[in-house]
Length: 231
Length: 164
Image 1 (cartoon, one colour):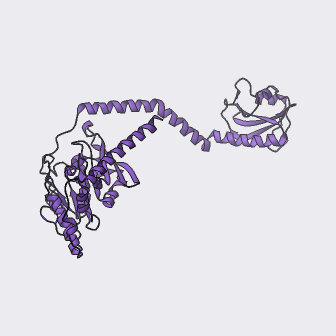
Image 2 (cartoon, chains in turn blue, yellow):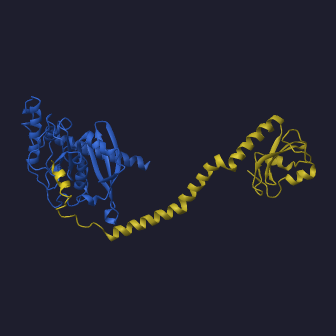
Image 3 (tube, chains in turn brown, red):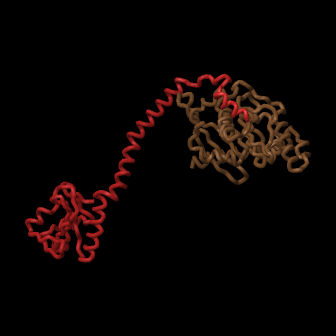
């Protein structure tokens, strides 16, 4: 896959490991997720996903001798499922230690805990006959903020690798697999696995409050930007 | 071996339905129109500005502007030293400096810098002082050129001389 001006962005995927790709339906979210995943697959990573994909490793993947999985997880439309922050925390708590990258292409926002590195297609020239899509990215982690953009050339290279019509498996299977992986990892280091047992998949009032405050913060930020422009 | 490695080994097959073509003629025409308008705008407005500023920057280092600035500095220094006013003249393809006081032109100095024949200018010469035209010239330095009143007339700017 060919990315331009992505020198800042691509290392961030590996650094932050929690990527939410948002945007309109059919705007190139899932395509980008698999394109990003390919960079890791070339390095020997496994792919776990809830959509049909020729790159997907079916069944259980085995960790290396240190308990690390070296895997990329593409959770298509994961925003429909990953609503509770506890789910994200239990699933992705050892993202770096287990060497797992989580990419969630989803129109619906997942829990705030998954919105660390956010990517969004901004302009697509594909419909005008030019195979270029411009994406913007941002990192928001507490007070720290960073943002930028990059270009993806020839996005059609990815077509046919995954099933675009597959709505994706929204059952617990992928999530439970990830929890199992976390438990196995903890056991490798002699830790109990109870931490992941009692995870509520429903949104708690804390999640709802967090989402509401996020929405309010975004609205205020937008209003502030508008005010600055008028001046 | 991962599924990806097997896929590469199998010759990178793409078994799933390809995305339908997203090309739209209206989007293409919109883009063409946008690029045309942008290009026209750039050609008519931006390019001249860029050219002018680029020429200005380049000329500061490489062309006549720099020579002129150097001349002005030198002329100012000498004028202060001599308690005289000065004008710069372009004549016979070279720059000249004419220092003058209340009594008229005191000294005319030929510079080694070339100038365009028709591009005579006055630097920092007050308008009222220009009226006190020089009548005679006295050479006082090595660079000076002794000129009689006829020669001064040749050097003097007349109708084509423009004040800055």
